Image 1 (tube, rainbow, N blue to C red):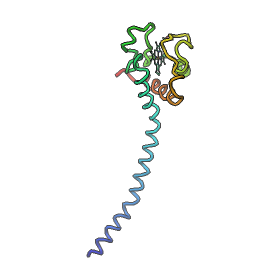
Image 2: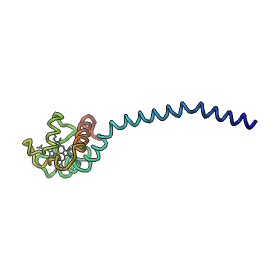
Image 3: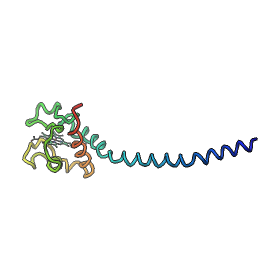
Image 4: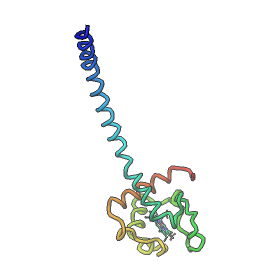
Length: 131
Ligand code: HEC
């Protein structure tokens, strides 16, 4: 009797094996899909640390500093710039593109991957309504 029980357990283990494998490969796929969102998430952290003080935590230009800056920091949710122009002002600063010198040149402060991440975040908020 005991022997049959052991055989039964062994059979169960064998039957379960292919499912265990399938589960592992699915979670790998989920990870790959999630990885494509990493730059935006990183970008959001950078935005909150570096940009929100002027552009507001919702990127809508509503910040305390906006009240004392002329021109005020842009509402990034309503930005009409092309990706290339937005990249230019973020990298080189406002003065370099004949806009307000109060917009810093982030090229000296952020790494290339941080710049790409924050630009991809700013691009993504354009498509979302203000929270
Ligand atoms: C010290 C305040 C300040 C900080 C910090 C700041 N900005 Fe700005 N930013 C400005 C001001 C002011 C303008 C508007 C310039 C103008 O209208 O001449 C501006 C404009 C912009 C624009 C142009 C938007 C448009 O459509 O015209 C972008 C994009 C931008 N900022 C992105 C960023 C990002 C990304 C960060 C953080 C990495 C950042 N800014 C941090 C002050 C700031």
